Length: 187
Picture 1 (cartoon, helix red, strand yellow):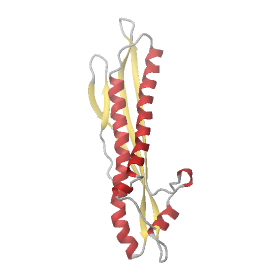
Picture 2 (cartoon, helix red, strand yellow):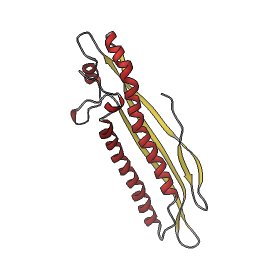
Picture 3 (cartoon, one colour):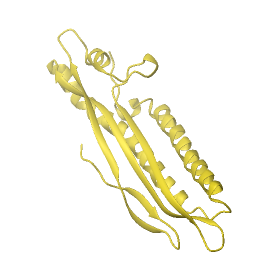
Picture 4 (cartoon, helix red, strand yellow):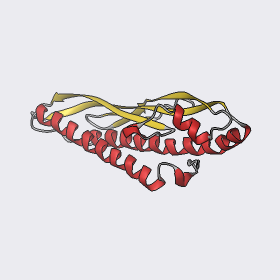
């Protein structure tokens, strides 16, 4: 997969100025070996390292939004953000079919693009969260006290991340973990 650079950095102060924000993307693969007498589903379930609560999943997208900032006390005594940096780190884990039957290879050729599309949906949730954090922090007004400003940064960004985590779970419920998108295998 191609590394994409597209997120949002805000430099704020006298006026918000938009700049580029990096999104780092890492693709992780795990090897799958399907042999005669084994279904593709069995091979994937056996090979996957993705096992939340013991349940095997064939793909996983982990995204993390990172932010840092600088502030200063203005002449009027208010504490204002001067720079806000937001970046997104995405790691997508997917299967790599190394060995299979011809039927398994045909099945995987249909299944894999749907699995990737499902995982890209999780990535888009992370991208939206990064944009929302950048926008919200860029709009924070100066406050009476830098400790109060720091608390508001943490509260604002944290609330956006929590909302995005709920959105991630709702996406899985809505798509039945990708089944409605074609990322489903039947034994």
